[in-house]
Image (cartoon, rainbow, N blue to C red; front, side, top):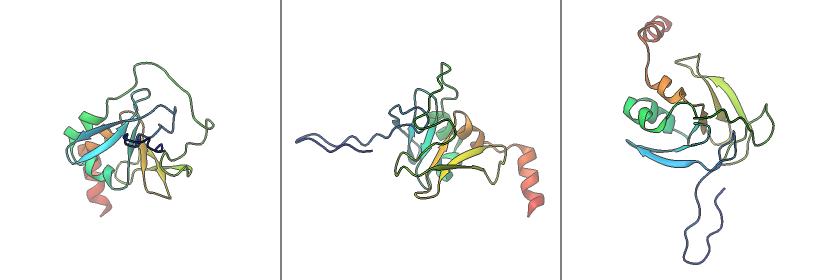
Length: 138
């Protein structure tokens, strides 16, 4: 949550990672600015940012570092429930409609999405098999 600014200083607009409470860094890539947790590798996408970021492999490579360098496993609230860094609502797990093997955490209140390390890269590249499945569904 943003802190109240002191005179002459702008408010801190960084958000905390829903997984480990570390401050997330803002990374600009292509047409979007996403929030990335350097500790666990998760990426936060505000509404509509996921569609833009996943459509461009270069953006995904810039923002999604992959897995964290160490096995850090700490959750802010409890192991089973993550909460939105924008409004505190519980995040729900849903499969991505185009790639159901990718399970994303979504906020039903604001529409933001939390991706685990590597998931943005995965969403940015549809395999030939996934494209064929998409054609047969229509």
